[in-house]
Image (cartoon, rainbow, N blue to C red; front, side):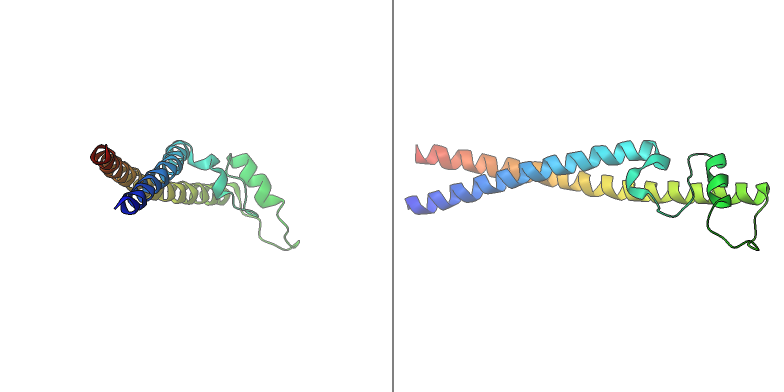
Length: 133
């Protein structure tokens, strides 16, 4: 009978430990998503190598004009460049918002699940300890 309680204790404490670790990871990801949602243009994970900078129109224009192209390549005028910049900027903002929204939802579910699992297992462990005493 005591061996069965020992296995129950190991299982209960293992679940509690895993939920605490998962909770900490989910909270970190949740906070990062909220911060990224506040400034989507400067999200580090969405750096697009080889793509023009979206920091400002002037940076975007310089990147487009100095990109490796042949001499006979088409060079768009400022109005077209503004439209291209606005479209690229809107696409990046939309991508970051989608990603952060997904992360916030998933992390919220994980946090709630961790709280429920930890609470139920911790209360169960306390009942086992009281029953043994």
